[in-house]
Length: 271
Ligand code: KMH
Ligand code: ZN
Image 1 (cartoon, rainbow, N blue to C red):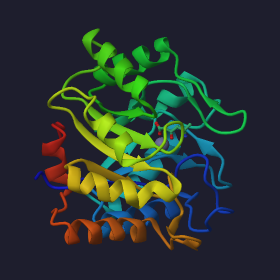
Image 2 (cartoon, helix red, strand yellow):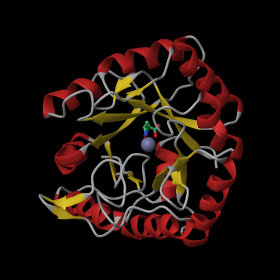
Image 3 (cartoon, protein in one colour):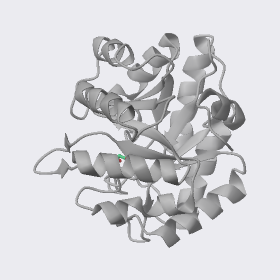
Image 4 (cartoon, helix red, strand yellow):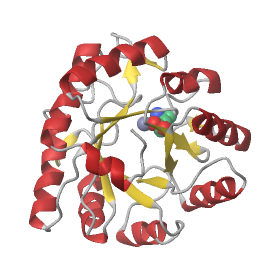
């Protein structure tokens, strides 16, 4: 089986220090959390950034500073900025980090309920425009899908030329769609031949989804963006601690961990 790519979503836009004091806000804290995940075995850092007070921002300069700080500590890690940003941001705000020509960035393929009155809006025009810009800037999308309909949108937009093959999907389960073994099988069997996938199980689903992905031949995303607990009621000390647990599971289940360069090969990234 292919080696396992572990993505660490170290920061997110919604989670705060009130949820877990180790959630990073400053440039130094973001670099510290990236390093802990990288040293534990993560080959991709899914990156949101914050102002020092924790306010989510898509500011290009802030991303540049954080990426430089991460690069100093993790020279070869794949950095994947978010183009989702935070609920309510404009498309122009959200696209800013792609001007830095990262190797990867997210492409959210549909609109999603985010709890309460929060709606994460991605219209058809937004998705097509983001897809086109990612192609122009040479950035490989990680296609974020929160339910099966979004997989179908992505396939349609690929046929229309807004996304290129081979496609790489992140199944975010436990937000809009439930997170069961049946859900993961359904999603993984719904993507085009030759695609790769990872799963982000949100909250209490994180490690169950990770274990399933390890045995199914998919890849795994963990991190504070999706879950702040290492065990029921026990806060994780760092993103690294979450990654370490996935590495342990993979070892027990006989799956080797991909280095960043091996992840580049698996995902057909041009470095
Ligand atoms: N924070 C969410 C509104 C992504 O990074 O592309 C969007 C999100 C998805 O986290
Ligand atoms: Zn994100």
